[in-house]
Length: 365
Image 1: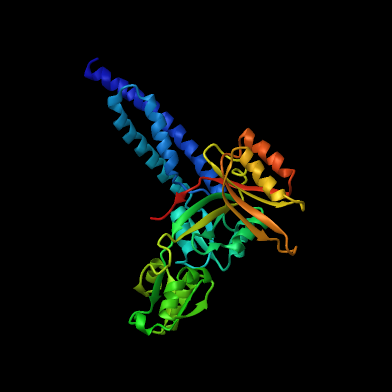
Image 2: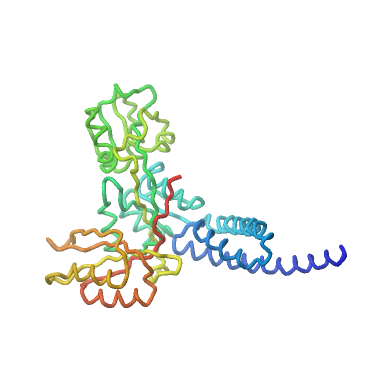
């Protein structure tokens, strides 16, 4: 084949590739719409890794594989950029003010969304229920201080679907107005969980504690008070936001202090499970009979599912009765999943699959 013939072949291939590229981008539009409806982020790093591994098998000449990977990476980058453009109008609710850890988490999960603050967990949740936002990001558990019961109750009582759980490493810092120092500080204010995470530090320095609705509100209050003796416990991002000085970093007791954040949407697409989602949340109440809890847990195990988390919470309207929250490894969309739910339903007064998600997704950086 001479040069002219080779160029004609390339032009024909490019023509076909252009048509396929347009078809692919039209499909990307559908993907973006789905992600908006279900409150999913643009980036799915694990899927990209699987796609690269799968697609390189289509290449027969091994010399071409690294170049094909570069081609795919470029194509996926273009796809993500286009999704970002399409999703810029996505509204994500969170509880707190700018600089709160929920705000930081929401910004990392949805870097191109419009983040909308609400004054409470309940208000952020209802923003999605009332279609004021497409998703909300709420803390569900801290590795040191434990569960956030108010959020767990919202999950049990409401109808929103979980589409993701993400881990955010939490570094607590002592922050105060500029010109202050640790020797000046008499009182610290913050969210009760933040105070609990730093209880040893607070005790050692004999600080008086004061609760605030969240860490960012505490930092804002310190900024407004302009009192050299009052400090907040908050993130570095919050200190920068309110022009505060970090007097001491990483004062939380646990060096692995991490908070789980849950993404909630009105979308029902994930409640039935997906091949890409290998964990799910179950919530149930049990019939009042001896051994029902152990029998329910045995059913889950008998069908090959591993329970990662189990917690109980009191029912608000019934004294001394409880509901259970479980995070379970496995695909609920399978025949085993359907059979397991059918058997479990026989032991439960109320049973719901709250949603499926990918476990162990970290947004530490």
